[in-house]
Image (cartoon, rainbow, N blue to C red; front, side, top):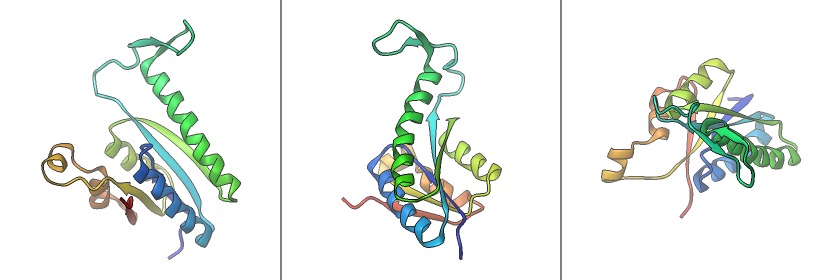
Amino acid sequence: MTWNTILVPHDFSASADHAVQIARHEAKVHGARIVLLHVVEMVPHFGHDLAMMTRPNTTTPISVRQYYTETATAALESVVAALVADGIDATSAIRCGVPIEEIRAYVGEQPIDLIVMGTHGRTGLRHALVGSVAERIVRQSPVPVLTIRHPA
């Protein structure tokens, strides 16, 4: 099977960084493009567009959503730059909302061939309460999903 576009959902965890390394390898083998997707998790009806804050070291007001989006964009761009420096066609995307819903929507809107994502390996009560985005993506994805557990 050949992959043209690999999606890596990235939550800035060590597991996500490890998934990027696996995706890097797959991209080199298949000549694929990597898309890093970060979902700025917003609680519905909280009013993130209305809630304001000031940027660090300034008095300029900014919405909470805009601040988190800008911060995530800057962080993802450094990962993209490292991939591009390694000769890989890479880009990033930012969405706001519920991670599982936004990842599914992105896959439905874009020509994604493979999802490579880290898993945190939660078990027991914590898994039952928090759930697993990776597990839900595996169950609901229309494309193959490779889950990567970060070596401890």
